[in-house]
Length: 502
Ligand SMILES: *Cc1c(COP(=O)(O)O)cnc(C)c1O
Image (cartoon, rainbow, N blue to C red; front, side, top):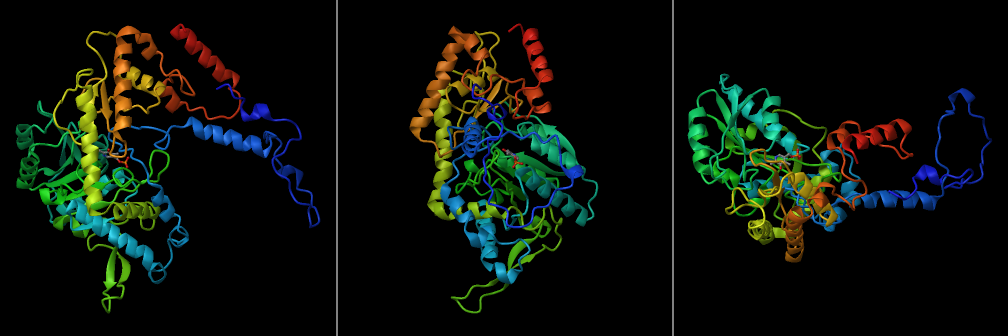
């Protein structure tokens, strides 16, 4: 970063604000209350504006370029969502307003609940959870309460395929269950024999990411659901990958009992620094009474056809309780509501069709350049291996870092764990063919570079604001400062360079 830091621009007496003349008697502030070490830069308003604008441009986001971060569905966030979320009647509504004065907002939540239920084939939806992982926790607590409510307390285990998202075993453990890992077969599906062997009356249920983290539709999903139901367990579907199912498959109709959605993935609300998230949970008949609350219901039907009903907030009969203050992240409900309305019936189906088409297109175009371990029809994402048998010492990470030089956000690295040097690519439906082709071309160029000039990959990125970071240290010893690097830090940096011999 050659641009001087804001402290280096400071000049004595320079100021960014002019205060009006004081029109009240001036009073001295008590000297012992004044900080003497408050060393702020003296800069003009324009310098401050440029400083922050420049910082904002160092960041990478979906508004800046292609972001194929598998499992995260980084799709474009339509601006109309933002317009709606900023309508004063919605944006300025206080969460403690009573039902009488917030009927419009409650109606919006009611319709969103119903549409999400319709899309997924479930009986009811609660909008409360604040993220996918919290939706997962809600779902597993609902399963637990269901069993306990029936007096069935011997069920202590939840089955999880090894192609599941990492949050799944974490959720199960947090909810007090033992997570039992199931192997995948050579097609990337759940190993049915291992599943049947694991099913008994100590199984509370199964948690499955569908399509799984290889981007594959489980080909025996109905048998999997039946096996778990047959031993008295319930089925949780991690619905973060609904971008591969929207308008085409209804998980509730497949037989799932409970599922969460990620509004900040599938339903285009912002995430990755632009959040907050929202992870509504949908339930079938058995789990409906256990949904977290409050949910919106009609408390008084419309008196006449052209009248509106009266909406109210209700706790489901055997609710697991509240997970969050108030009603969930309402601003995200507004955005998701807008997104569904704008797309309509046909648009919702097209989202999935194009997301799946785009991911399959990239896979087929890259299969001769990179190893694609499960090289068959995939959903909205797929996984390839970021290494070459004939080049030593090139890893998925090197390919990712080099992609940054070509102006792309890297795919997800080293996940799922069952694929060596995994790169998980999810283009989403919001990119056009020209962008996909540019990305494919970059991936092919990088493969050629790996063979001809491998050091170019190992030392990438070359164009990013900072060079390759020690990612563990960057996360654990985060140095956030707007001053020149302090001496002690500069020392550690140069000793690291010496260690590496650079
Ligand atoms: C993103 C994701 C989650 C977790 O969602 P958060 O909103 O990040 O908590 C869970 N499962 C899968 C498959 C995901 O992709």
